[in-house]
Length: 285
Image 1: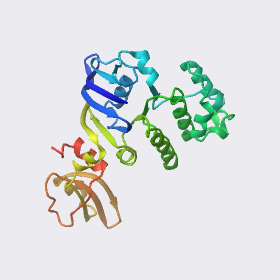
Image 2: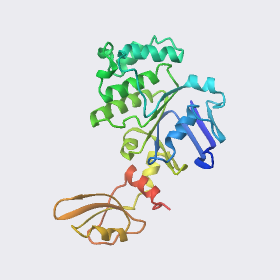
Image 3: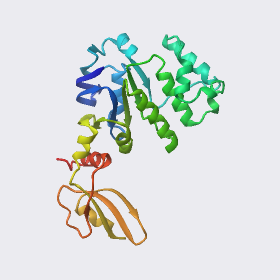
Image 4: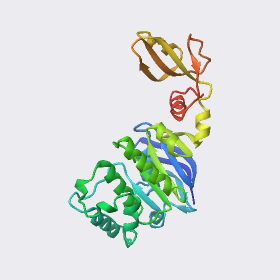
């Protein structure tokens, strides 16, 4: 199974939201990383045929997304914002979505077991926690046993324990299928994905392996300790990624194109977040 995106464009009136997107996505977990407004959700809606492209094309296993009915048989989709009828039970909610989707729903018991909600099948949706509702959403997206699962910000608003549960679910499914997830949290990509596309202002500024993304920031990441109150001086040396205050000093993680000669600067190993920030701030140029 593969997805080929060819020179994809999307406009809303004169406003260009996606510009010349080209990428290949194959089996496993693929992450779309970008800040809010970068075009991630629009790209996902084009992939799942909810929006028509203004130019270019997408092929899934050789089938163009212009063949809407055929493509939708291959895809499961979980948007960032979704809802169920609060007074329906968990099981009836799944049956309802199955009926709307034109599938039998014979796999509902198995899916509810997979997302660890079988023991709550008779509970009303309004009694579920946010994480449970998100897992129920994943279950309904899998009703048609899709070859491709597309999930938009799947862990938004979840606590760390539920985030881990959701990513474990997606990772298990990605062993045999394609899972595309979007997020603005770089650490989520590093923990779950093998390949990543970085979107910025509607353009794909990186597409490749997570390892190759991390390499973009190699030799450009430093940790610096400076006296409290001198924080602003670091702007002369590069881009600050993060900082923490120990009461006396400020410990800063900094990106710099050049060797950082400030006293106390120590070179460190790069991460996905470092590389992502380097791309957005043009420090990889």
